[in-house]
Length: 306
Image 1 (cartoon, rainbow, N blue to C red):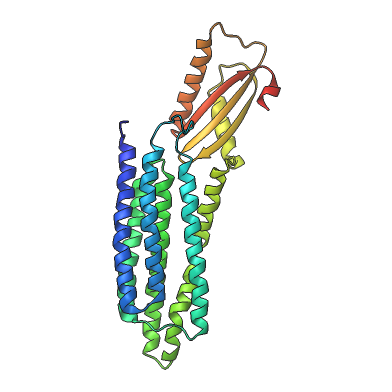
Image 2 (image 1 turned 90 degrees about the vertical axis):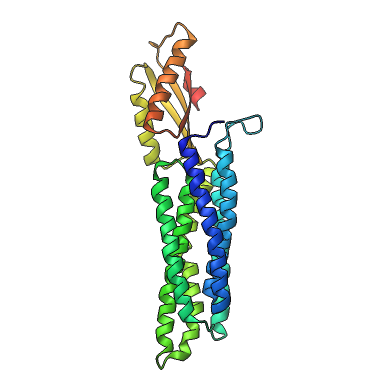
C-alpha cells in the first residue's frame, strides 16, 4: 500500500512522541533518585506509561491504515478507540494509586526532598512537555487522527504535572527558608494528591469518548442533525418520502448507513443509475468531510428501514 502524506505525517508525529517519552523517562527517574521526590517519581512513571503507550500507538497507526481484509471486514479503525480507552484507564489507575500512596505518606509525616534540584527538573519538564504537546496539536490539526490528538492531550497532562511540580517545589524551597520549615516535607505528598486528582477529568473524558466509539454509540444529536442536513442537500434530485440515517464513529472513520425511502415517482432503467446517485452523493459528502464512509440503500417499504 502506498503511504500518503497524511499517514507519513501521523507516523512522524507519533515517532517523535515515542522517542521524547523515552528521554523523559530517564530524566524523570534520574531526578527522582537524586531528589527523593515521590512527585517526580510519579511523573517518571507517567512518562514510562506514555513511552509504552507510544510504542503501541505506532503499531496501531500502521494497522488503521490497512484496508479491510478477510479477518477484519470493516478495516482496523476500531482498534484506535480501543487503544485510547486502554490508555485512559491506565492513566486513571496510576493517578488513583499515586493519590492513595500520598495520603499514606502525608499521615506519616510527609517526605523530604531536594527542592532546589526538583525545581530544575520542574522547569525542564514543563517546557519540554508543553512544547511537545503544542507541536503535536498544531501539526496534527490537519490530520484525521485520534491517536495524535490523544497523544497531544497526554503530553499536555504531563506538562500540567510538571508545572505543578515546579510551583509546588518552589513554594517548598521558600518555606524551608522560613520558621515553617518543618512543614516543607508535607509539600511533596500534598502536591502529588493535587496532581493525581486534578488531571483525572482529562483521561476520564477520553475514556468516555472512546467507550462510546467502542460500543458503537451514535454521535450527539446536534452532530447527526448537521450530517443529515448535508446529506439531504446531495439528494435534491431524488424523489423520496424519507431518509433514515444511522451514524457511528470508529476511530478516524465516520460510518453512515442511509436508507432512502423512495416515493411512487422514483424510477430507474438500470442499476447503473442507482450507482451514479450513490457515487455523486458519497463524493459530495466526502468533499465536505473526508472521514465519511457511506452505504446507501434504496427501498420502498418503510419497514425495511427499521
